[in-house]
Length: 100
Image (cartoon, rainbow, N blue to C red; front, side):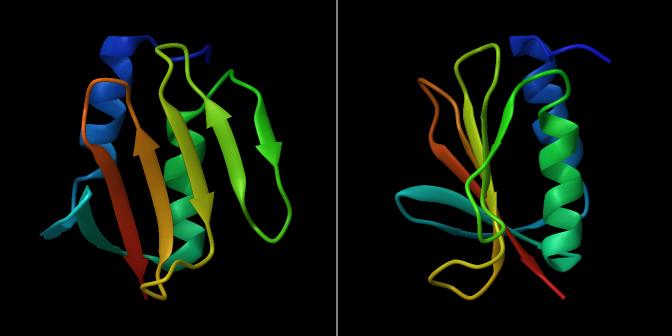
């Protein structure tokens, strides 16, 4: 599978949000989803086929997608949840928090 196109990235994000519930709106639109850090990593990998993924240590991985979106996955956040963050130019920041 090659790198996702801009149109496919929106579709991939929609697929990842299946089963997630809206949590709150702050600086970012936040959703909650079950599955913990394992599911967060699976969803990150689904967003980043064919692109360079940088392992930054401590479970943090980042990638820049073909449309300029920056994504990262980390095992915890200030809210205690594993988090997948999708920062797409021109769109609000999207954070998916993963609970067990």
